[in-house]
Amino acid sequence: MNISIVVPLFNEEESLPELCAWIDRVMQENNFTYEVLLVDDGSTDGSWEVVRRLREENPNIHGIRFQRNYGKSAALNVGFEAVQGDVVITMDADLQDSPDEIPELYRKITQDGFDLVSGWKKVRYDSKLAKNIPSKIFNWTTRRMSKIKLHDFNCGLKAYRKEVVKNIEVYSEMHRYIPVLAKWEGFGKIGEQVVQHQKRKYGTTKFGLNRFINGYLDLFTIMFISKFGKQPMHFFGLIGTTSFLLGFIAFVIVCTLRLCGRIALTNSVWFYVSMLFILMGTVLFLAGFLGELIVRNSTFRNQYKIRERM
Image (tube, rainbow, N blue to C red; front, side, top):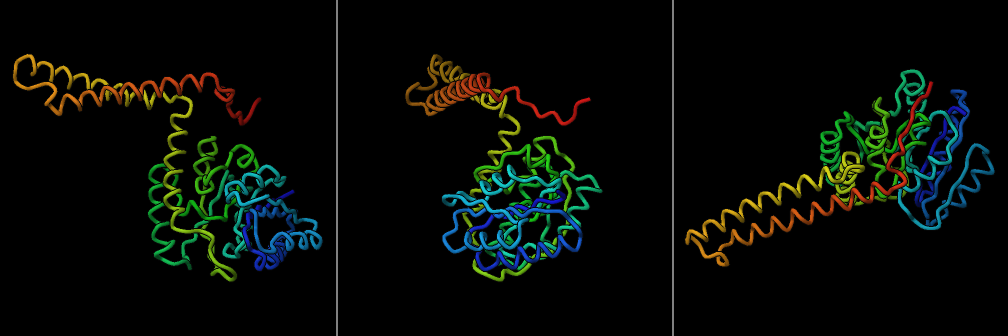
């Protein structure tokens, strides 16, 4: 199979028939063998009935339905587990991603040798205050922290080699950082393609401003895990030791001044500051130590991805 297309959806009954017809036309024009996985993330409208009807009309369409709403990351992760195509395409169900971009995305993976190609909606039709400006800030921060030169990390239109999606796990709200997850797993050839952004035709956006706050928290999480996931003592131990030493030095200075009669020990704010730093350092060091114990006893501590064997 050439292409698997994963489409997470939530209350998109109006757009699904048009989207699937558009995808089928593009596939037929390019003689691609394909499948479409429509992952219903707990829709409360008639989306699943539409998926059933589309499946009856086109055997290339498959549906997965969640019991309740789990989020886009869960939908993508389940879709990635089920795909069979050599190239995997993800796109949103709201018709703002154009299936006409698929052939070029496929070519970049199969001919140019990219592991992942992310769409870049250079011209957007979203509200500047609600999405455009926060997106630019979010993408700038992610680009600086991850060292991946992409303009639009959160674009739903992406293409992957099958090996990429089979070796990453998308959870929480980590769908924004799939390029970072891929790089973390050793898939470093990541490209970008300018794609057309369509105006929303049906319904309303499912995302609010709170996604950017959650997005930054997830970014810090994934950057921490990628660097210190298997060596937590390198983070907690370093900060804890530094804090303990600073507190101990301050404590020695305070005690020396007390012995010289320069200050009253219990009336000095620096005495309490030194105690605070010593206590913080001890707690952080113990946190690192406990983290190391957990990692050492984890069944995943020596699981490494082997890309090729001779």
